[in-house]
Image (tube, rainbow, N blue to C red):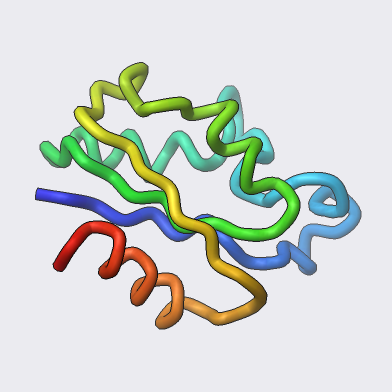
Length: 100
């Protein structure tokens, strides 16, 4: 089974915190927000995850998460969403990337 995590958006409601980074990279309690959905998928038995992101901080996800092995994932892949395509566009990109 494969999972998809959408980590896009402008984070405009969290300005000025999101002026220099993606909102999903901000800390919530003791770890970046993006860790929570990934860990939830792993706890549900998902071993392959695709992360959809965009904007200037896209490379930061790769630096932080790497190949996903630290979470127990077999495979963590990434896709880049250009512009503000919304959730439907992000899922279209994920569908193409995971071969559904």
